[in-house]
Length: 467
Image (cartoon, rainbow, N blue to C red; front, side):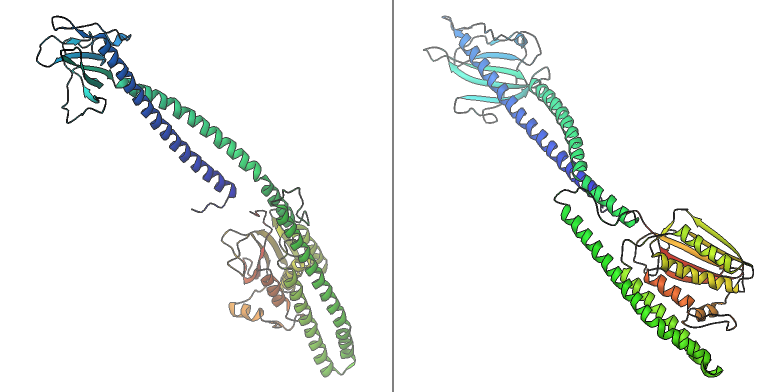
């Protein structure tokens, strides 16, 4: 699974690396200590071997004599694995000398082929004694007098001493490395979190911009992030200038067309009825078309702006108050949940879309219209299904006659009026559809629970998750 958090990635990599490095270091140090302990153990046996050699002689009667004192009580205690043995070699016969710890027991001796002598005429090998101890043996042969009489000297040491020493050292080493590793991970985590804190500040600043609480990315950023913050601010300023320029051009164009269209409408009143009605209807249609395309141009200029935000409740309350004054015989209900719900649209675009739907509902309602605004579920998407964001569901429902499926298709066509007895240009629903589509939303028409028409708008909501 891909990890999306930068902090989690760095912490995971440092944790894995530190764990692997500490394990390798622990094994390496433990191995080096074992080799050093084994080498020191062998040197100890060699030193004791030559102490025994220096303590043994051959008497006048040809018997071995001597009492080696190695300074280690283990050579005097039975079954310890610490022994020394001196055996005669050659044609003469005499009793061997053995340490008190060995007594009458024997030490297995491998052949010279299995354990050959080295250049110093010494050999070292491991065997198991009669007591089950695994012992290391240091052995050599020495000529003791001028007559050429020689003896074999062997000194043994218990290998468990080395193993216990290595085990104790490794245990202490691993505990120390584990403590060091945990401490290092904590320090690394704190350092990483502290080092990445400016990114959290940048994210919080972006959230304030998206929430409409700020117009620029403000903060004391380090040198690595400052260029990014400057570029984001430059992009926001450029976006704002584009929006303002588009609005100015739209206003200029609307102003320049307003007078000619008004003249046409006035002239239509003085013409004879048949021609005047034709001119008037065409002028009104032209007026609606011009307004629709001006709206589309304005929305297209600012649809990508991160500053578009409108609080739903106050904007919808204003619309409902106006509709109540204009339609005193119709009851208007408003439901907004949660109260702080916000839509990622310009306020005038939201009011125009919802206002058109409320006008249609009031025109055909018998006595009641309901307007609701709620957060849409996670499975709800806008007109562009690939856009991942939070959505708001606005619904306008009346208790009028409603529409059949084929009538709904006709109603969404530009300039189509299903009821010619009602006033209007037939552009309201098409304008709502165009505006909602420009914001990547959509409009759905269906029969509501009161039997009338239910118009549902899926519009982009303001999300605070900028990560």
